[in-house]
Length: 511
Image 1 (cartoon, rainbow, N blue to C red):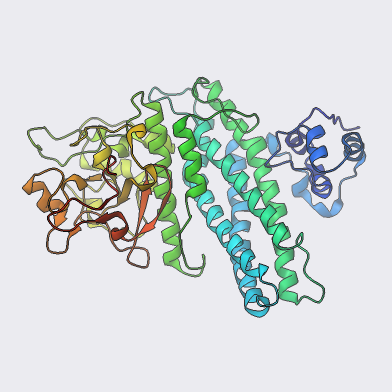
Image 2 (cartoon, helix red, strand yellow):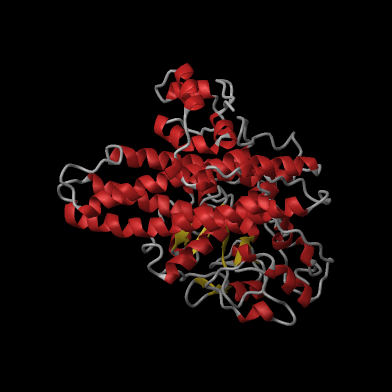
């Protein structure tokens, strides 16, 4: 039976309906993954082909027996759970293993041939950045988006609650895919189209061949997400009555606009790992744990900006005070904690009373792995009276229930890229926030009792956030523009005793 292929079909639709044509689309240079929403007419033109000739070629193409059964599987017929499992067990595993092998091969090439071909060093840095981006992307899919899609498939209705939509994390993943496509285009520029020079050693040749294999696998990987899984997730949410169109218009298959907060989320994806220096991934367990921690931090940042966008006042979420009265205010219920409020935005559905038992809190936190750093070994996770809520704390300056501002809108932050949104808490902390308005000498807000718990006057350092973690004098920070990265505390705070801080990355209105 002849294939029905027209110029008005998108490249993604063709790859979905006729997976056996994917090798031919690759050969023709037609982008069916990152730009899979383009019509064949436009995609063929962009590839330098005559559109009508491309149609005839695809209709007449015979499947390549060497392509194997994977090229003929109808992935569109899979459930979201089946497809997510396939992506994790096939493409994620392959990419992680291949990137680890490429790190070794490229390092050998640079050591042996870097002097004669300086572009190898640029290739090494490009692939290193791609590796970090892909590792972080996989973690966020496996821990946030894919579980969310699996739950959508099991549900029969959208429960009441904040107007969150699966479109938001999908938009972030689609933007990641665009960045990966740009990285491979840069790799092609640096390698003359993955063509090793004449007389190149076997390591050099193998390196370029492996890069080509990874690129082809990544194309198939992105195609299955952009053109099959993500639209299925959006359709499932719409069937259940979720995802209000007036607030969530951008989908992978058609263009759309961003709100200010959504734009900050997109910028966060681009800026996530800039400036991070890590050992080669896969060679040190601590480096792997740091990547997980940073991915957690970024997921929290994304969820917080989504929450702020859904809140009409565009405030960041509240923080939970200790289990005692503070300045005449009663202790706050657990359900005002950002840990609880952000649960829907990371795909966790749970309902708790205002004052749950410690056992109920622990059960809830176990469902929120995004809040737990793998290097956090606090004894308070199992505390009887006040269990630890998270490895990370929100900057209380930003919250509606802390002085001196009692809530700060995203639009009021003076320098979002230099305003700390969250930081890693010390392991003794049971709260979900830290209070830098009580730091320093003098502090912004005077309260000797609270300052004594927050600030060490002898070292001029806070007692409540980590200064050293992940292999050095640094800890991970998330900023209100959405980017995250490791910093020494001295990057964020400088004060001469008796004077106003000359650097204060915690006060959202500091110059």
